[in-house]
Image 1 (cartoon, rainbow, N blue to C red):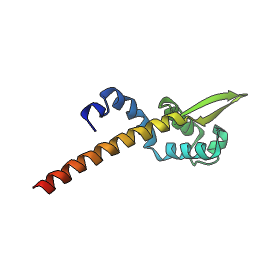
Image 2 (image 1 turned 180 degrees about the vertical axis):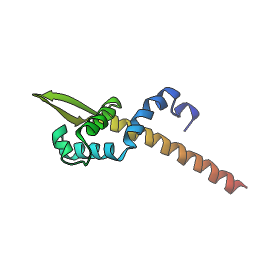
Image 3 (image 1 turned 90 degrees about the vertical axis):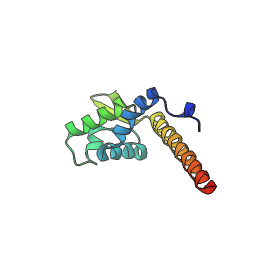
Length: 115
């Protein structure tokens, strides 16, 4: 992979909140739950997590700000659902990093074998 293919500073800036949101156990658990159960209200999510409704809402807001979930109103409740595109972005970032590491290890191997 060439330096031109490396993550640009703008792409790194875009990726940082995504990975920060994924770096919390409760938020990761919320994503797994929404992924497996589909859209859920805060009330339904709250029955699955040992945190206050206020804390749960804050976690969901962080996930929404990073683009990992979205909500809509149904009557008096907000229904939360997974935004799969951002998980695809995370996968693409990790794939790119993996290729960079593979390339670096390949260069190291070639160097050692020459020496």
